[in-house]
Amino acid sequence: HAKANGRSDFQFFIEAMRDEVAERVTIEHELKIALEKEQFVLHYQPQIEPGARRVVGLEALVRWQHPTRGLVFPGDFIALAEETRLIVPLGKWVLEEACRQLKYWHQAGYADLHMSVNLSPAQFHDQSLPALVRQVLAKFDLPAGQLHLEITESMAMSDPEENIIMMQALADIGVKLALDDFGTGYSSLAYLKLFPIDIIKIDRSFVKDIETDENDAAICEMTMLLAQKLGKQVVAEGVETEAQLEFVSRIGCQWIQGYLFSKPLAAAVAGNFIQGFAG
Ligand code: C2E
Ligand code: MG
Ligand code: MG
Ligand code: MG
Image 1 (cartoon, protein in one colour):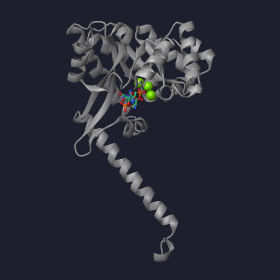
Image 2 (tube, rainbow, N blue to C red; image 1 turned 120 degrees about the vertical axis):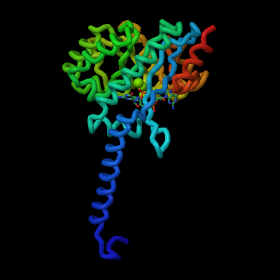
Image 3 (cartoon, rainbow, N blue to C red; image 1 turned 135 degrees about the vertical axis):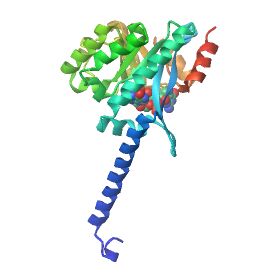
Image 4 (tube, rainbow, N blue to C red; image 1 turned 180 degrees about the vertical axis):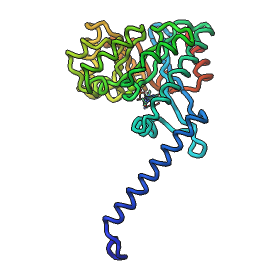
């Protein structure tokens, strides 16, 4: 026990905190080095239109090839990158790399593909974002409409009046905007009408139990109806089973992303997937 060897619980608390701070400082330092040494890599998850048997696009998802810890997933470093604002240069790298890869696939004969790129709050609130997007599109000579930028619903709703201005600036470039993790962020229907977004991504948490949970099923059906009325495309995230595919297809969802078709893949493997899928 803490008191037994003359140390208070508070001292233990302080030490635990110190360890945590040290750990954070280490990761923060490592993140900086990772950027310089280009230890990040993008994996690509296909988005499928099953009815047409085609890959419509891919979502770029960042991973960190850590020299000792192996492949680290975004859940373990994006939040810290966001807090330290390292996400801004990292996000710039992601945008460039994803567009470079998209151009490569366009030139390989898949000119209809789009690329979806996630934006973090710090990136989205950076006033130079529209200029960066224009610059990257020009660098790779890509049609703006084939770049899809994903912002989470909760981020969009955090200051909707202000965010509409940035969304509009991006929409004016011609890129498409997707509302990610939809259903988790308490959208007001009024804002959904005002947001210049083209795509709604139904969060995986609603798809998971769609066959057994009536509430989840109802939320998905309502989202589909609303999206259809508002003229927006819907992507169902996290489709893992044939039964889930059947359900989301039946309610009218045409674009599917999930392990049923493919996990996120390294670029070369994703290329093979695209080639093998059609037909
Ligand atoms: P997200 O944007 O909602 O991306 C979808 C996540 O769900 C990905 O996890 C993907 O691997 C996972 N997923 C897709 N289909 C399935 C499925 O059928 N079953 C299950 N269990 N999972 C599925 P990942 O790659 O770990 O990314 C997690 C989150 O990290 C992303 O969620 C996104 O918010 C963030 N993230 C990833 N890459 C970036 C990036 O380049 N920039 C920023 N700002 N955030 C990123
Ligand atoms: Mg996303
Ligand atoms: Mg998502
Ligand atoms: Mg999600």
